[in-house]
Amino acid sequence: MTEFLLVVASALLPAATMTVTALVGRAQHRVAVVDVAWGLGFVLVAVAAGIVGTVIDADDPVRRWLLVAMVTVWGLRLAWHIRGKLSDHGEDPRYEKLLGGTLDEVGMGRAVRKVFGIQGLAQWFVSVPVVVGALLGVAWWPVVWVGVALWAVGFVFEAVGDAQLAAYKRDPHRGPVLNRGLWRWTRHPNYFGDACVWWGLWLAGGLASGWLPGLLTVLAPVAMTYFLVFATGARLLESEMMKRPGYPEYAGRTSMFLPRPPR
Image 1 (spheres, rainbow, N blue to C red):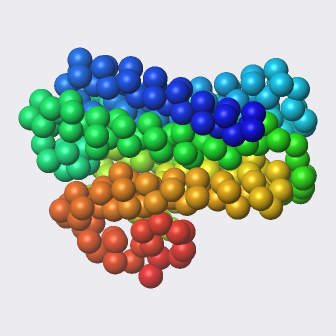
Image 2 (cartoon, rainbow, N blue to C red):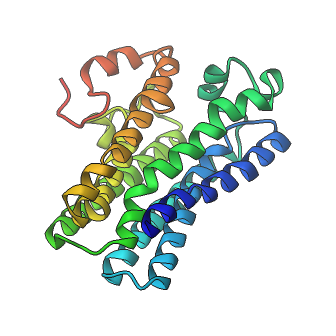
């Protein structure tokens, strides 16, 4: 019962994070600031779960703080990367499309319902395997290490993909489309990496705690993957990218999500 109450109480941190982010967004007249808070919110939940797990003297402190470290490294890198992207840009076209206009045009109420509130709920839900892993003992250590390996693959895809995209944007002689490096194998290596990170955290935090915790938390990485592919990720971005010269041809030969050799 204590663990259940703590999982429910962990919703308070994402709610507070998104409330502050909404206020910052209103001051800056853009919703895109939510992308910086996305990674930071997960870090807050993971650290809080690690502290609570230590206070109640739960088993396996190594796995608990390993999960906290994995989330923290991922979340801080992502927040720093997106902060750099936002510093010189206005609103993200994805959010204008999702909201049906700019923040000033549609109002804060619509932005809270369709962006800030949804992402706060998603932060809590996707974090559940990490919270469970911080509070329960390990049933299968090999599953923990498989999860760590998958997390590492995802982190490399995400970090390298973002670095290659940044280098492409700095190149004055770049072509119309980035089609080299990881981007030759998938049109969204950063989103694919993100999905691997959270499936790895589910393995290490949820499934490694036993079959029942694994089954009860498996919808968390499913939800994250859905967000990355269909909700605010690849599909929404693709609708804008398809308007660029050369992108439809690139899309015709390159996998949208799962990496594979180009056609």
